Length: 412
Image 1 (cartoon, rainbow, N blue to C red):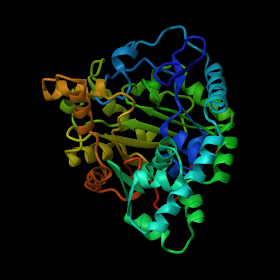
Image 2 (cartoon, rainbow, N blue to C red):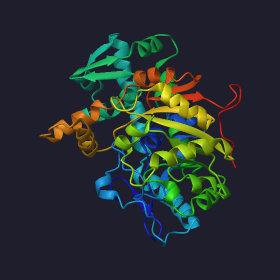
Image 3 (cartoon, one colour):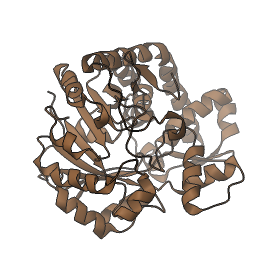
């Protein structure tokens, strides 16, 4: 295992890594990522890739440590059978759940949360001292901090120094008479749902082939999709669109194909994606123009990076109109693990003189957009916004999809 990756297969070009939302669902029983809009529960999803170290891009915002993982874009001639990969990914996910994700810890956390919130109700103040909570609940600092993460992750509480500030909407909800226990179990964490989430997670229902690298480079990508389908699992593939011919000739398409659109013009594309192949922009555009001919649901994803590509909305609209996907989404760039390598790449663009790791982290964070910035940009694209997730900094729009048609993907 490296950087959280769990490698599978005989040749180790495939890997999985449980995402933040997978862990959130196991810890709370109620929280899901934006995929829930499409009927995908986070605890039932395997975040994986058959091409962990191979990609045609070297994007400046890529959360992978490209400099260490990258093996170019020529996939090895000897590779693992898709059936082996599918089986091993499922086995590895189940093994992780049993070994890493302790059921007792989140169950105890629900009780700690309720204790903390009762202190809030007793004081009636929207601002509380961290030390006051530890003293009144008699919980350790670690337990209070762990419980606070549930509230902070849900944007219900902000911590500044020793002070905790409760969200106004959260305060109104707790004072509305619905009952503290009921509110916690419904909106924050539920013991019953945590137990069920752990049980259900042992039988994955979805594979998101989006973890790292370019999944279409794997020579048997369509057969891998077919293997998951035979197991009654849905699939997402997130591609950078630089392999239009291979995409057009797939025998088996995923439940939903995402094409990442990281720039609105070729100049920005070359700066942001740093393509390793010739005519990358032209190939991406060919893929976009072919989207409407594919026999699967399609989505164009704009990965929004503050101070980099959240501009020129009319240029994006032109590209979207030509591709006519079912969906268009704008999803905010997110820092994962160490931000040093991202800060280093971005500092080169800005031509900054970097003197410390602190500077690199600061630069990386300056490119992370807020949800409001993502929403503001999405609103300029002119398509109907049907879903949004503040915690994921995500906005979903319809392009070629009936407003009254269900977004959920049917099981195979």
